[in-house]
Length: 218
Length: 233
Image (cartoon, rainbow over all chains, first blue to last red; front, side, top):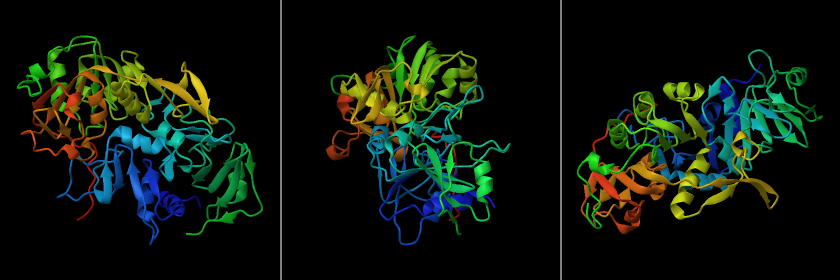
C-alpha cells in the first residue's frame, strides 16, 4: 500500500534529532510536527520570522499578529524568538537550519527540484522555497511518486522551471524513500507492501536498487 | 512634524509627496502586519503607475489587493501571489508587470538598499528562471548570482508602538518585512496602534530606530485573518 499523508509525515519525523532546528513547508511537511518522537525536542522555524512555532491557538488566544508561513494562526512555544524577514532568511541562507522538509512537483537524478510554477497554468510564486533549497544541506522532499495519471515525478531532467539546481539528496514519496547520488536515485526503503517492480516502473530517472533495500515499518 | 518629532495628524500628510510612477515598499506578510490604512490612502489618492515591492499583494478587496482594482500598480515585485485571483488574472493577461523574487532575496534586497549595499551575491535562484540575465560567479565552489538592492520613494510600514522620535516596535510576527522595508524608503511612513511618550520604549527594545523614520501616524486597524486555525481548548 502506498503511504498515507500521515505515514509520510511519520517517516520524515524519524529523521528528527534532539536539538534540531527544522523548517517545515506547507502540506505533508507541516504534519511532521505531529510525530516528533518522545524525548526529542526540536525548534520549528517559520520563515515569516518565528523560531519556535507552537500549536494552533484556542478561540481565546487567537491573535491576528501571530501567524506561520502558511498564514495560519499559531502560537509561540516557550523559548521562541521572533524577528524580521531578513533575519529569518539569514538563518536559512546561512545554513543554520538543520533540516528542511518541503514538497515538490518534480525532482531529478541531478538533485534538481521544481516546485513553484507550471507555465501557463499555475503562477503562485516561489515564496521562500528557492532560499530554503539553496541554503539548506539537509533537505527531504515529500511528494507522490507519480501523478494521478501514473506519470513519474522522479525524472532524468525536471520538465518544469526549477526551484533549485543540484540541491536535493533525499526524497520520500508515497511508495519509497530514496537518495540521490552520482546522477541516480538509490532506492533505500519501500512502503509496506509496495513491490520494487512497481517503484521501478514508476521511476523515470535512473534508479539503482541495492541489495539491502528495507521495507518501512509503522 | 517638526525636527525630531515625526508625528503627523492626518493620512493626507502621511503620504504627502506621493505621486504617479513612484516606487513604494510595503511591510507585511500575507495580511499580517500590513499598513492597511496607508494602502487605503493610496487608493483614495488615485496615484497610478506605481511599482510596489511587497512579499504578497494582499487579497481581493483587502490590503494591496485594493490597488489592483483601479490598476494603480504598474509593476509588482513580490515572492508569492497565491491568494489573489485579481492579481493572477492581471498577471496572466499581461496588464500587470510582475517580478517574482525569492522571499529571502526580496528581504535582503531591501536590507541592502537601506544599508547602502548596491548588490550582493546569493546562491538562491542559481540555475532557475530567477537567474536569467544576472551575473553569476563561483565562491568556494558554490555557484551564486548577483542580485541588486531595492530602495523606494516611499516605504509604508505597520508598527505596534512608536514614540515621537519615530522609534518603532512591532508586535509578534507582524514584524516580518516591516523593519527591513523601513530602512529602504526615501520617505518612510509608519502607522501604529499607539503613540507613546518619549522614554516609554526602552532603548534596548527598539526594532526600528527613529533615524529611518520620517512620519508617524496613529491608526485603527481591522487586522483581518487569512487562515483562521484553531485547536480545541
